[in-house]
Length: 428
Image 1 (tube, rainbow, N blue to C red):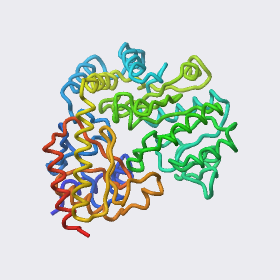
Image 2: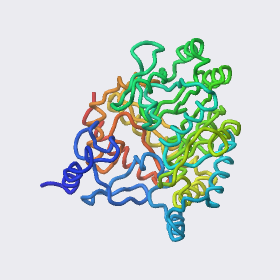
Image 3: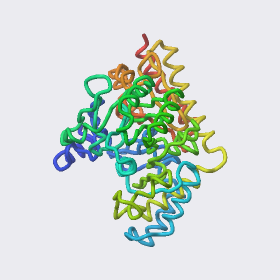
Image 4: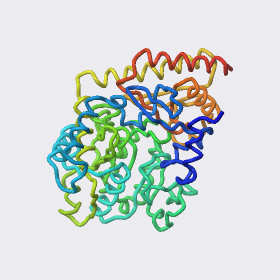
C-alpha cells in the first residue's frame, strides 16, 4: 500500500526539482522516501502518515529548546499581530544587535540578514572590501552556504586553487578560492608563506558540522589566528551552526580565540529565517551605508524572526541550560558507543554542547578525508533501522546531529536501546 509520504514525494517531483527545496531532504544519500513532516512538538515530529519520531535533526540546529516552544510561539504570535514585515527599522532589531554583541564580545557591530548563506556571502565581500584583496581560504568539507565563491572543492594538488563543485559557478570565481585540508597546520602555514599578501580572509567552521562533527586541534586554530593577524587577513568564524549550540559564547568562547568577523543563524532565529554577521568595528564600518561595501535585504531584521530569536536567546541564558544540554548529548553518544563496542561493531561518536557526530569508523575523524573513509553503507542501514523504529537522524553520513532541551533521559535511553538491537544484529 502506498504511504502518504510516497504520494507526496511523487507529487512534489512534478513541480519541485527533486521533490525538495533543499537537496539533503531528498534522501538521495541514504535511499528511500523522505518523510514529509506535518507537526513537531518538543523532541518529537510527526510525518504525513501520522508516524511519530524522536527527532535528532532539530531543523538542522535551531530547535535547541525543542519544537514549538510555547514561549517562542507566543513571541511570534504577538509580533505577527503587529505586522509581518515593514521594510523599515524596528526597536527589536536594536535589541537583537545589542544582545548578540553582549553574548559575543568579538562583535562590536552586527548586521542582520535573512539566512546563513547571506551572512557568509556578505562577510566575505566585506573582508575583500576591507583588505582590497581577492583570494580567500576555505577548508575541504566545510560548507558556508551556496554563494559562488564557496561552492568550490579542493584543487588537484597541494596548495592549488579550487575547482567549482557546482555547475553554474564560473572558473573565474573559483580561481580566487584556495581550498585546504581541515586540521592541517603545515599546509596552512605554507599557504600563508607563499600567498599571504593576496589573502583577503579565511572562513572556517570552527567546529565543523557539515562533514559530520569534526573538532579542530588547538594547534591548528591558534596558528590560524596568528597567521591571519601577521598577514592582515580577516579571520571569519562561520558559527551559523555552532553559534549558541555548543555553548553560551559559541566556539570562540570554548577556545578563547577572537575572530575578526562571525556569521550566525539557526538558534538566533528560534526556528524562523534569520542570519547575522558582525565583528570588529573598523571592518563593519565599511558596510553600506557607512562604507562602500554594499549589502541590503528587504526582510533583513524581520520583526517576527527577531521576536522568535530574542525569545530563544532569553531561555538558553537560564542558569544550567548548557550543562543539562551537554549532559543529555553526552549520554547519547556514550551510550551508543558503549553499545557498539559491546557487540564488536566498528563505530564511534563525539559531541560538543548540543551537537553530535556518529561515525562508522575506528576513530573520530579529524578531516574530510577521514570522514570519507567511514563505512557509509553501515550508516545507511543503521539510519533506516532507526527511522523505521521512530528515531529520526540526519539522512546523511556527513551531517551532524542535534539534541534539544526537550529530550529527556528516557528519550535518550530509548534511542540507545533501539540502536543496541541493531548493533546486536550486526555484531562482528
